[in-house]
Length: 243
Image (tube, rainbow, N blue to C red; front, side, top):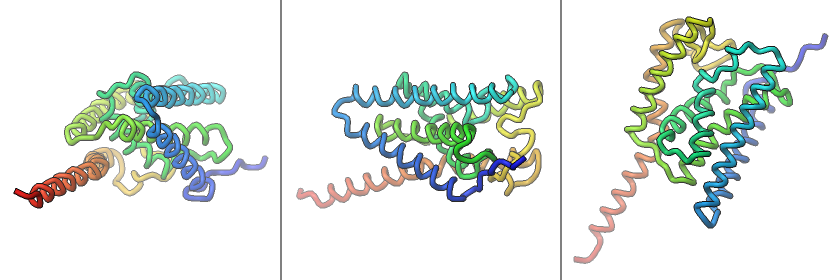
């Protein structure tokens, strides 16, 4: 039997599909920014949230059709949980979910697309739901940031990291009970990932703490420097204003 083609990380298919998702997300946000009313922007946000829900339904249908266990369909990986939170944030315009959707979403989905835990390649259904799902996470977080103008904060980093550790404790308990590997707390992914650069189990779990903090700070950095630039620009205008 001929072996099915395997996704080549940073191969042509991988790069082109990520570029397609980036252009599609950017185009959607650009259209929303041109809306004449807030109601229009909210409707487009709801539509994006419903697209996420649709993708998740199709993902579960695909897994069921391939004999997945019930436990394999539980949304206890970081991206599996945050995609549902992102859908809820957009559909209900719930700002309290934003810190988690921004820091978990972008900080988790982007590395997952760069080093995918996915062997299948285009046009396999798992390839499509994997990349489209992660792309929608990023698009949802950026939609809230650019269209709703919700901005990440330092306090939001603390909230996101606290909830991440609480979720890790919950996921670890589930892993112990049912023998799963949510959040890769029991073993590293079978495919290449940033965890390969770290020590073995359980040390890489502890090493991920400062990495998670660094990723959150990196995601906050553009807003920090923007604030500093605006303050300096305002001070310069005040100094140059005539008495």
